[in-house]
Image (cartoon, rainbow, N blue to C red):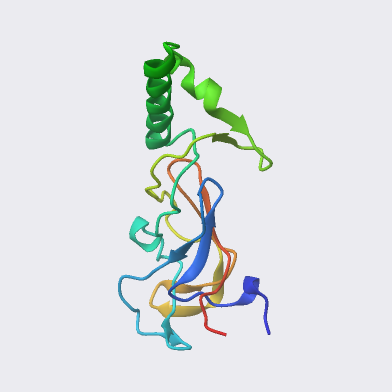
Length: 158
């Protein structure tokens, strides 16, 4: 059996984001008419925000929802203790993790906002429809808030 790097991706493939709280799914709004094992095949152009289901929470310091969550926590601490550190919230809540990127120590709402114009891995000689090449595994997209979204399973049933 071929590894994920050479395998076609279909509706419901598993994805992850380096700023996400949990894994998620890649979904298609409509089929392109090509099915593998009874699931619609994904193209490199299926990269809109509607194709990527949220990752449950976002730890990106570039996401305004994450910053707002941290500020809300600071306000709650100030109400309870009288200590106000809201203007230092980004500095206090930001940490560098193993991936070399800075993450917030709290989670904001995850709303994937894809800035990539296509997935970055394709089957060079296979088109699902005119001008749209077939997507293959371990492809990535970039989110507006710095997240790297990666396909981790093909979505094809066993």
